[in-house]
Length: 287
Image (tube, rainbow, N blue to C red; front, side, top):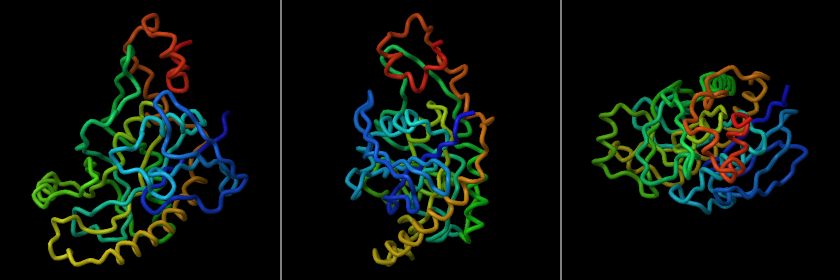
């Protein structure tokens, strides 16, 4: 049985994982270019963890420029089976207040032109994405969040926009008619690529403010947003510590074998270069 390895992708505010022991920095090259930063590996209370700051150290990379394929490929190459993404989001509902935690179970993709698949250049794959997050991991995160005292909203829809600009008021009001719960810029195509790589994925999202639909809340100061972000980062760290111990040693969820029937291209028509480049992802299906 392989060792349980948990990946953490830190969003705004979460640039390092406190409490890591046996820390090692790993720099990887991938067929898709460079990841956001070096991967930080170590043990968190005995569990092997791989951490990556999504925007790079110092928050250098804006959402539209993130190399999502390199980030997820690197996680896969390092043996990660579970990814916990941490994100700051805007609330689209009055009931989701700034500082609340949301564990979404659905996404709407409003991004434009981001590479969203590992399968191109002579190989075609189609994965199921009706349920885009791992149900096992999501339930564990809900329980862990409640255990550390967070106000947790279970399920809900995350709409991912291109950015880096925030929505217009007209767009924000339109998205509200779609019954979305939160809005952000980074969880897609991250979740799609994790599914292609057969990695369990779920998000810990923290509302830092109401989106611009909430005209009465426009006078919230940047200082207040930063205060909420700092507190949310501490809550995320505590939630992750709780969650990693509850993860099962073996995976029997839909994520673990998402590619089993997904590769459409006959093996004899897949080039040796493509097989080599994608070996961490498709290798077990090429034997």
